[in-house]
Length: 370
Ligand code: NAD
Ligand code: TYD
Figure (cartoon, helix red, strand yellow):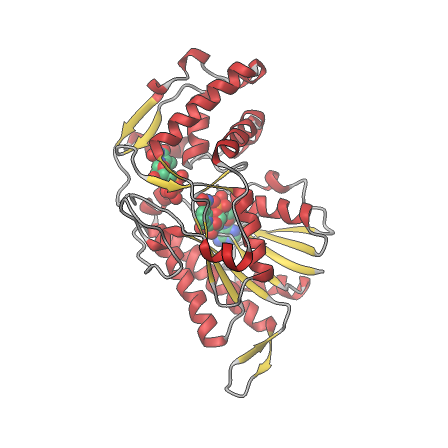
C-alpha cells in the first residue's frame, strides 16, 4: 500500500484521477490537498472521501508548515502535483497568482519531500532516496509554445512559453528538472494536450460552450476560430499519469496526447450539433434547456476579439510514452464528446454549484471586454 498526496484533487483532472485510482487500484491510499479556489469543488469528490482510503485536507501547496504536517501524519510515498492556476485568460489578467501557485507551490512540495524522503548520501555527495518514493509533475504542452501548420511537439522541442500561464508551468518544470540534476530527486513529468470530459470547469472552451448553448447565450469564438488544440479525454490522461508514476523512468519527461487536432470552430459546431441531436433523440434532456430547441444553431456563434498572444496550434507526438510504456489513447473524440455532453446534460446541478459564487460576474466582465 502506498500513500499518495494528490494536490489539486478537487479540480478537473485531479478529481478524475482520484476517482480513477480509487476504482482501479487496491494498493493506494490518497490524501487530497486542495485550496478550493474558484476552480476546486469539494462536492466533486465528496463521495470518494471515506477517511480510510481517501482523506481530504483544505490548504495551499505553498504552505510549508501544512505540507510538512501532511508528510509527517500520513507518511507520503508519492506526490502527484495537479494543483495550479490553470486558465490562460485569467493569467493574462493576474499573472502574479500564477507564479506564486504554479512555481513556488511546486518548489515547496519538492522541498518538503526532500526532508522526508532522503535516506543518506552516495560517494559523490548526492542524496540517496527511499526506493518507493516518487514525485510527479503534471505539466502541459503549452510549455512548448505555438506551432505553425506543420509538425508536433516532442519531448526535445525547445521550451518557448508565450502566456503567463505557460511561462509559470515552464518555470515549474525547470525547477523540477533542476532538482532532478542537483539532488537526483526522483521525479517524472508529463506534458499533456487539452483535456475534456466530466467535471471540467465551465470557463474552459468545451464546457463553456455547452453551458451557453443550453441557455441560448452567444458562443464566444476568439479571433477567427482557426486555432488548433489537440484534445484528449481526461480519463486517458489519468491512465497515462499513473503509468508514468508506476513505470516511467525517473528524470524523464513524457508527452501525452491523442492525435486529435481540431480547430476551435470545429469543436463549437460539433458541440452544437451533438447537443441538438441528443435533445432530439432523448426529449427528456430538453428539460434542462433555458431556451427554445429551435435556437440551438450556428447562429449562436459570435466571433469576438482574440486572446492576447493566442497560441495558434498545439499538437503532441506521444511516441515516447507509447513505445516505452505502451500507452495509447482509448477514447475516440467522436465517442468522448458525446459522453462528455451527456454528462453535462445529466449533471446540471454540478454546473449550477460550481458557477454559483462569483463566477457569473467574472464571466460577464470578461466578455464585456471582448
Ligand atoms: P483546475 O483549474 O480544474 O484545477 C486546479 C485545482 O487546483 C483546483 O481544485 C484548485 O482549487 C486547486 N488549487 C489551485 N491553487 C492551489 C493551491 N495554491 N494549493 C492547493 N490547491 C490549489 O485545473 P485542471 O484543468 O484540472 O489542471 C490540473 C493540472 O493539469 C494543472 O497543473 C494544469 O496545468 C495541468 N494541465 C491541464 C490541462 C487541461 O487541459 N486542463 C492540460 C495539460 C495539463
Ligand atoms: P481553453 O479551454 O481556455 O484552453 P487553452 O487556452 O489552455 O488551450 O481554450 C481552448 C481554445 O479555445 C483556445 O484556443 C482559446 C479558445 N476559446 C474560445 O475561442 N472561446 C472561449 O470562450 C474560450 C474559453 C476559449
